[in-house]
Structures are given as structure tokens and as C-alpha cells.
Image 1 (cartoon, rainbow, N blue to C red):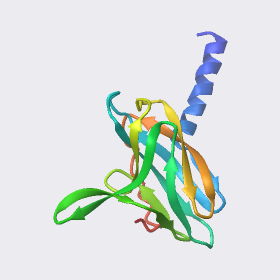
Image 2 (cartoon, rainbow, N blue to C red):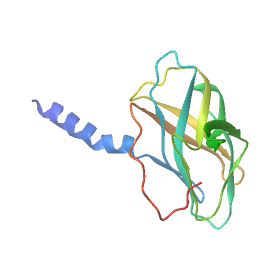
Image 3 (tube, helix red, strand yellow):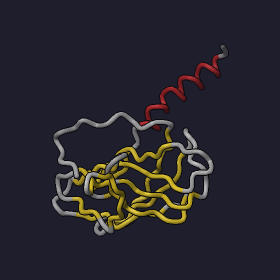
Image 4 (tube, rainbow, N blue to C red):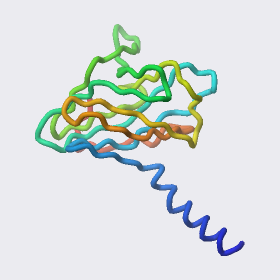
Amino acid sequence: MSFNKVVSALFFCCLAPLTLAHEFDAGSLHIDHPWSRALPPVAPTGAAYLSIANHGEQADELLGADTPAADKVEIHEHKHVDGLMKMQQVQTLPVAPGETLVFQPGGYHLMLFNLKQPLVAGEHFPLTLHFSKAGDVEVVVNVQAEAPPAHTDDAHSHH
């Protein structure tokens, strides 16, 4: 292997963890690992997941989101209703001080309607989150073949 190939290989090995654990800060809000699952090219809808921690003294509120990758983004949650799992839209979500709001399969998620591009593993797309206090926060959503391992951080309360 040539010296340049070795240097290139080492460079990309060092970058790999950065694509797996990406984080964004906006004031007292910390947004961790936005991701979406890869889908077949014909899928009309997708979902994005992330966690939002409020390290500040004031509550904030997620008002919504948008992305150039889809016509519309809605906040949704899965709920058990009469023994069935139902998905319903949530208009806004409070993020209390000291709380971490977790978006994950089977819970809260950002529903992406009328996808404009296929969600292909290894690719990414921008997503803008709209907060009442922190304002607009642009994050990058990584498209993954599988869900990342679940966080088992019991120090935070989860919705």
C-alpha cells in the first residue's frame, strides 16, 4: 500500500466516529445524533429521530421542523389507545430544564411526508428544528441502515 493510501485510510477511520456521534448546540439546548432509517426508494414517508437535552434554567418548546428532503415535517408520537398502537400528530413539545426529550422508534418522531429523495444508508440531509426560545436550529440527519443502539441513560427523565 502506498503512503498516500495509508494516510487516506487513517484519515477516514478517524472521521468515521464523527459521522456516528454528531451533536448540535443552540443556547442551552443540546441536540444529539439526528438519524433516519434507510428506506426503499418508493417510500413516500420517513421519520427522523434525535434527542434534545435542555441544560438551561428556562423551558423551551419544539414548535416544528422542516427539511428540503420532504414536503412536510410533523411531530408525531406513538400511543397505546384501547390496546392498540396509534400514531398521532403533536402540535408542540415542551423541553423542560434538566429534561431530555428522546425521539425514537415507537415513541416521538419527526414524520417526513412526500420525500423528495430516497433515504439511502450513508447519506444525510439537513433538518431545521423550530424552537420557541432557541429559534431555528439546523442539524444534519444521518441516514442509517439500522437503528443505533438505545441509550440507557437513566439520569434523565424521558417523555
